[in-house]
Image (cartoon, rainbow, N blue to C red; front, side, top):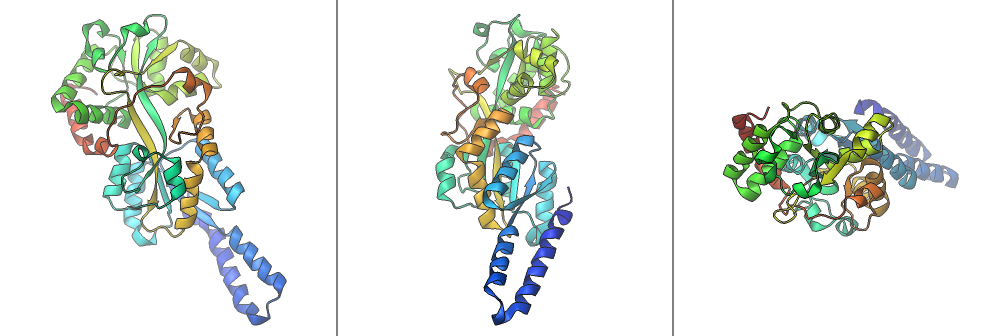
Length: 359
């Protein structure tokens, strides 16, 4: 989407408003002043650079505009591409907010000095401290757990326990996972490096490779379909993909989801790996008040419930109710670590994957 095209109507309207104000002078009528005031309200905007490409997000933007009158202009792209664009644009950027998935990417954005702290009591009330950057350079908006999914026909949940157990001989030729190029897998391994050390993380990667049912192929949903096809018995997936399959318009995908069980590993040890999507206020935002209002809105109870019910992510706002499918999986213990560490250990995780032959 071309941001300059989106902003042309805004620029033109602004110029017209200024011209009319100059001509009106002291003799401007009360009606004209009222028109100017109404025009200014219509001109309110917030410009978003986002690496999240979900219809649920788009609907929340529309609802925000209907409620506040503030138009949301959206530019989509890959996270790294948008970070580089913000660095390149510097003070001239029109972007007010940067939105992306993964704590490591959010930390990378902060380290590249493209974000600034957000000050808002509303946000602090909406989002727990552990779901925000320590300096509030980014604010969490949704989480997803990386779990073990299994065939209900061939695996009993009492056979499952930890991520580490997937390396045991009983799972030889039965484990499915996507490529090591997946940021989700890189962050999972980065969490193991932080919690267990590099040696243990490498041993885990070696063990999973040894137990692959096939070489990594496709995305998370493809691992679920491979389980349904009998290629493997267990897979490593993000929870929200299970929700998307279960609520798909495609009956075959719904059937795949019906045959899957969801297991939250490591409940007796470090907890299940959770990653986060977050929003950051750009360093050179031209509309910081509007941007802060959008963060407040997106982390509010109503928007959080909508995002969770339509994208099957876990809400960060503890007051937001989860949809039935998320409730059916039950509560779980999550890993306790700073999301920044996912970025800190990302390169080492890639090195380990390459060393152990996880393609």
